Length: 377
Image (cartoon, rainbow, N blue to C red):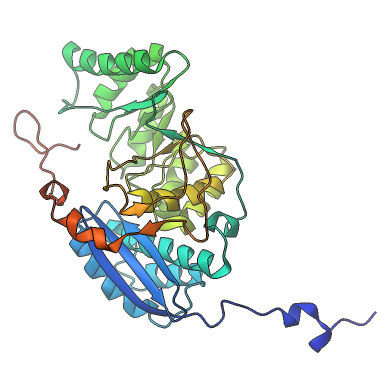
């Protein structure tokens, strides 16, 4: 049989509705301690993304500079634009400033693309792999932190105070609830080994951020000594930051943050790497409802997912500034976001009120130990 060609070929006659859409502007806004990015197009479709974990004024200026690489581009070429931004300057690729800002741009591009095709972003990612996503904190799933400061190796009172916090959390959620402990890279390795042995009876879901990233040998040493599942990833970025944990088999759960690691595009890639090692994701997320929604879209589309962090109802951003389209039920599960794109409505008129609140101004942390030395927190 002859091959179908020319005007008789159905594939050749499918119109690409996204072929003529172009990026026309990028606007950045400081909104409290966050930065919101708005990407505009010649078709009137706009997309929004969130920068978190950076000084927001700096994030806005960097985004404005990166617009030089986006102006006139087709926003639906998301992978191409991610590569163009990340690899644009050989001496500045990676790192939190570049990657966190790219994360927000990536969210906005997915938002535009979903709106252009009239579908939620998770449809563009292969569709949902689950009906709902378990989240925390809820009455039945709680994470307790380190308090602090903590010495390099603990005396009995140092260990006992942390054990009590975990015991109290277990009592709050009950035997059928979930407890997590966030070491926050602030409990030095020797003390963490002491603590882990003491909290084994409380059956926590995972011990988060056991060490400061940078030396994989520290994580390997901790994994050899600690029986509790270890989780990390919020301070690591892109597939290249996550890969050593998987290769060295020293982490049981990965916690990429959609707004830190390179956006939705990298979240999907990280999940594929983790799937190959049978390691689930438990996404870290300290974004407002805008970034949370982006992270949820990615989380709904990955195969291996344990639980998702999120803080709603005005905790990180006043209610209504970023209006979400998902709900959380009384059992602690988030529903699928609704509507095209990310499914988030942004109220730009509320930005000024947020910025006028002195409690929502970015301030550099200054953590110290009891002797005045600088500590991790």
